[in-house]
Image (cartoon, rainbow, N blue to C red; front, side):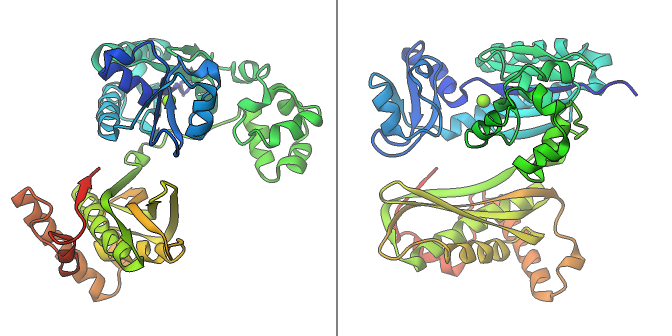
Length: 397
Ligand SMILES: [Mg+2]
């Protein structure tokens, strides 16, 4: 068997780069993408603002303290999704084995593509070039015989980086890198590890498994293997559609659990339609609620069996809502999404009751009708009717 060649491709400062691409006056400027200038968090920071210590996930207040001159741009998720689709279309020209990790990041197994397109480095260069010329954005890539090394490599020369790890060279490549590069060793764990004398991934590779398990728990065994370059995880293309969601921002804040629950039914029905069209079902249901003060809360549940129909998704969503503080709170945005997506409808044997089976047939008909009218509002459940036109006005987001 030829050695596996895996690419990890990661877009550079993705949201911020899309904003700079679309608005020339932002190019070369310190740009922060985020919800609101006062509240909210940094979703992305352009490379011009990073030297000031601005990082994504930092509070906007902290970011603006560090870089008061930064230009704050609200997110345009539709543009990021469109750019992401173009980037993933480039990936799929080189291999069908693409495992998305997020909108802007994926693993690609190009082992079988080498006879057509050249070695891993050649393919990585070609992908980077196409992304630059066709999507007008830059990406960084890591090429390696395993996922972990490819992921670490793509991050080493950002932006516009390309780092190749030779076959058989994974352990040597990893050894000099600081332990913070290891998966699962974050800012909390790293100081403890350093105090124990672990400074580099090489130190982890040389340690006894037991010593790592003592500090890291069962994760320690995994760390020991990764540090030695032992990582045989496949690129999992089945995770292709990682999540499907629907959400709305309301012009007037919602008050009370009942009003919020009704919006979840609307979202659940849109999500169910998209799953049905894709011929997929999902294990995990997530709801999110943004309060009038812009704090965002989400809750998720992973079900024993994958679901596809509105009722099942809505039931799970309402169950999650009971774990969300709502009393005396006003809500400006709600959303439902599903992840853990698998191809195919839930197997019949998993839906023994006739009600669920009937439900699926109703969904199928509803989807077909909605499709014909090219308008998802064409067929509406009775409990949704009071959302429109007298209900709160909605902005699709
Ligand atoms: Mg990225």
